[in-house]
Length: 87
Image (cartoon, rainbow, N blue to C red):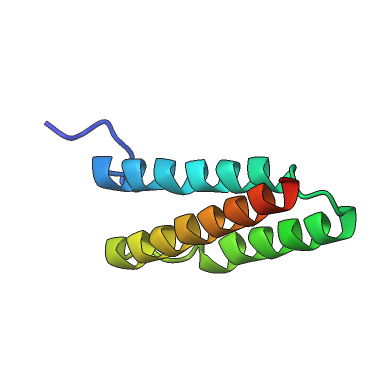
């Protein structure tokens, strides 16, 4: 019996990895809302959008996980910088 799924359907690993990428994207933009300077905030938003667009072609799980790790680290650094500027 043939599968009813389309041939280009994601597997579970790809789906979960995609969810992680989307979560990071949302977390970055939630954090960027806290940047007080509008010009800086806009530049960071443009940079984040361009970075995600430039890397969306990757399909290798190891490469994606590596980029996620780097993205999370960068996000934590930004959050720390914002916390320090608030205090």
